[in-house]
Amino acid sequence: MLPDLESLRCFAIAADALSFRVAAARVALSPAAFSDRVRRLEETLDVRLFERTTRRVALTEAGLRLLPHARAALQAAELGAAAARAADTQTPLTLRLGTRYELGMSWLVPALGPLRCARPTRRIHLVFGEGDDLLGRLRRGDVDAVVTSARLVEAGLETAPLHVEDYVFVAARARLESRPLRCATDAARHCLLDTRPDLPLFRYFRDARPALEEWRFEDVELLGTIAAVRHRVLEGAGVAVLPRYFVEATLADRALTALFPETPLPHDWFRLVFPTGSPLAAPLRMLASELGRRPLT
Image (cartoon, rainbow, N blue to C red):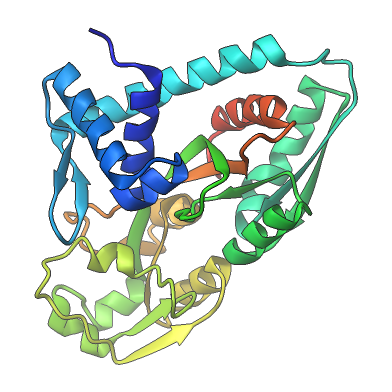
């Protein structure tokens, strides 16, 4: 038997959220009903897709292999439905997208020209903000959709995947020459640069390390945005976890060095998020497909 699309959708959402409780809320199922759906998918495929403990949910090797194919199947189904419902491409269309500043400037703004060429009657307006602010604007109807990698806990939202967001722990090469960082105890000689206290980027590295390992830094400097963090890292002011796409060029030219490259960090997904039942769902999914073909920069 082949898995049904709704089971694949539940699997993909659980893989994204890494929480069955959160994933169940997003598809309006009880936790028990959601777990049963995942269990039946595992029985259909005769593999175990998740390892679950009281502390965490993680994908198995089989789950990791299935995930890109599940996303591709869901996207193909969404595009087929969107194509069937899509209005005439000559009909004027305006879409208001919320995004954070760095991603908007590096990725979405350069995409506006090609997107306009692909559909001249489509207008895309950008609104810049941060995660909570953008979701608030979406709830109030100030924007039609937001591009975010934030984990969503509220019901009533649909998502379309865009790109995986990988993270890397970095420091300036010059800083490491005078103050190496080879183990947790070396952290006492370094300042940790991060964005905000309630959602630190350093958690991506800390969660990937042994549970009993303690990281105590000499100081912590909070800077609000990843652009400010990258600037300070390049100055040699400290160490930081940053999105890989945002520091790829500086890693390539060796201005920055990846720390503990043997430790694979968890990742997020950039997604286009919009209200369930939105009358713009079809063109938004078509836009998500177009954006998903553009590499992150």
